[in-house]
Image: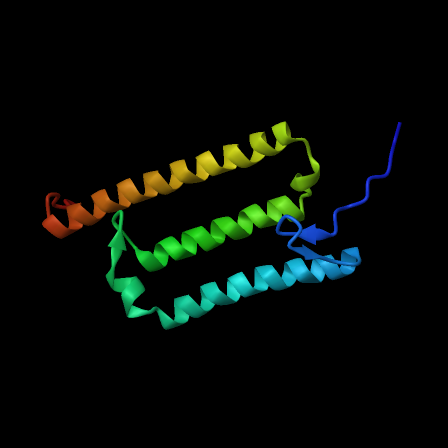
Length: 129
């Protein structure tokens, strides 16, 4: 038996409510555009404080890029792929799987990148071509 389910016309857990699907799409577009503009502006300006300070062997600016990118990916999945309308079990299966995979990949990249940096910095390996 097919049934029609109205899409929720709110974002941020009801903090912003819209009158139609078109206005909601524009609202989501504006939110994602603002986050992207902040990323691009930080990439162009590169504030000295964020470039000079490190956290877990990575510049603070890079952490901000990673966090904002994860926010955009989560938000696109949540809103455009209608995960908010699915059962909690499916939401958890999709979102947590992606979160753990991303954390795993970021950890591997940080470990391997730090190792390669130390090898080049300290000169432990000579290249024989």
